[in-house]
Length: 289
Ligand code: C5P
Image (cartoon, rainbow, N blue to C red):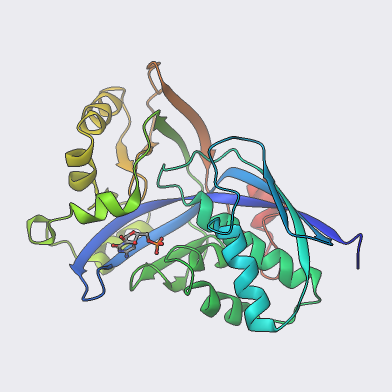
């Protein structure tokens, strides 16, 4: 067991639409959102070891027990009653505080990796159910890459892959802390769109992209509203903020303009095969199901 290890991709996500329906008693918000995995990925190396260690290729990521990777490991230990230690190395490429779900994806990947390393003591449904205890977005990353998510985001309806789309992810230097954005949401001011209709339109290839968190994020950081306008002027047909920001997903024929301090990543949709993790970033392989 001592030498056993796994290396897995940990993908980012975009929200093709994100509807905020209400503020709940517990302070969370009821959402309805179409989540899609993209091929902007971190790589997670997980190896059974004598002590727990976590290292990361970039500074600024907490490596202590507050990291969702450790929350996932602790959850897995608690639920399975297995006792073990792991050495984890995270190659970070997904920008942080970007609304791309990087931390949640790392946690889901960790749960999958541990389950594989220990001979699958848990079913996928158990991993999915457990994951909601440590965050709202982790559950999605245990789907096959396309899912309609409701509740606070943790109730997933897995969907077949959508037609492939190329997009650009545009990330300004400043990040946005999720709780700060949600605090500024004024639910009663949001357009009363029906998320089921948005879902039907996306599945019919007539995307209805929007993000109800944009007004709140632009109130926290007005430069984001300006950036969105510049991206729309660059010719994209759809520009929408990812999750609670601060990155944007840009669809269509435009070319992202060069802007100082703004990182640009080409991306496309990815899905995984049933029973397998995101081992390939080649979309054609993931469609062989
Ligand atoms: O569940 P997670 O830890 O990802 O959520 C981070 C924060 O985002 C929560 O503490 C809450 O402030 C906000 N949030 C929310 N409604 C959601 C999801 C997150 O208000 N559905």
